[in-house]
Amino acid sequence: MSVFDEHLEQFEGAQRSALAATVATARTALPGAVEVLAWGMPTFRAGDAEGPNILSVTGFKNHNSLFPHSGSLAESLGEALDGWDVTKGTIHFERDRPFPAPLLKRILKARIVEINASYPKRNGELREYYDNGFAKARGRMKGEELTGAWQWWRRDGSLMRSGAFKTGEQVGEWITYDRQGQPHRVTDFGRA
Image 1 (cartoon, rainbow, N blue to C red):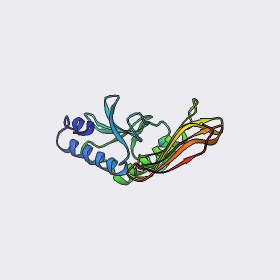
Image 2 (image 1 turned 30 degrees about the vertical axis):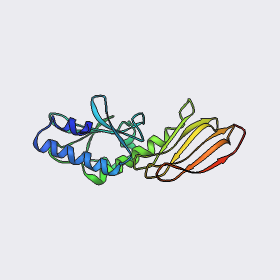
Image 3 (image 1 turned 90 degrees about the vertical axis):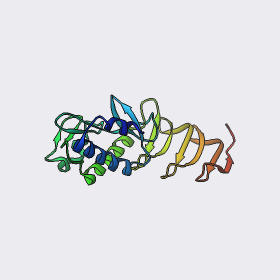
């Protein structure tokens, strides 16, 4: 049983059904996301358990809430959120109705865009995600150049390629993988 399913056990009737339907929509839209417990709430994270938070969902006495982990999402979605009770960190919805699937999918896509735009970090870490929650690329930047170990994945989450850079140039052994994760081709760029 997932952390979401365990969390939903505490709710009853129509509220549990509304939350479960909302979670099901998010699961379908984000097959590459990992479900974790963060801040006491079930949370979808991009790529892996250490990835950035995309969305948390939970219920309260008088409403249910989405936590998109973004203070600027309401601005980027504009009129799409008109009529919704939106605070800096949450979007409230009715206890007995699921959050509308088309709007939820739009929110999830906007979050992935925000997450991707937040990289590279000051320490050079760079991650990029597909709109379905799977990792697309991970590595480091030094200034404008790729540096150190890098990995790239396909949209289905399978590892596609790995290798390293030194001062922005490919070095050492680079591996291209088949969809089962087995090395398909190895290229040696030398100068490791």
